[in-house]
Length: 168
Image (cartoon, one colour):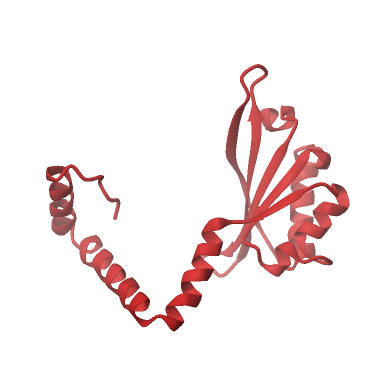
């Protein structure tokens, strides 16, 4: 945390989910500048916080408590990345609105991976062959993942063909 505190700027990335027991929780990552002369950009996982619910005020309160616990300066938080959901980006009661109350200059970005997931889930409804393609990929993964022998054979052929090794 010392390196994060020393950074002139901090970016936070928030992602809420629920675990296997259906407990709502939020993962917090921070990206910051490190080093006095050679500034390097470092991203670090900070914490997973259980949440009572996923309302913007609840999520912000968890972030606020974390910032205060680690004695960080809200004015240093210049960027927030999230999944783009309304509880994160809403103008009145989203996490971003609460962050902007503390720092009106904070920027936000909707995570590209979340955008891609939303796009493909919307498209596969309308484009039948895309759904079939996804089904084939899922079946292929299952075929190799469920057999140590098939997985070993796949790795052998990847090596023989000088292809990057896939992790299954």
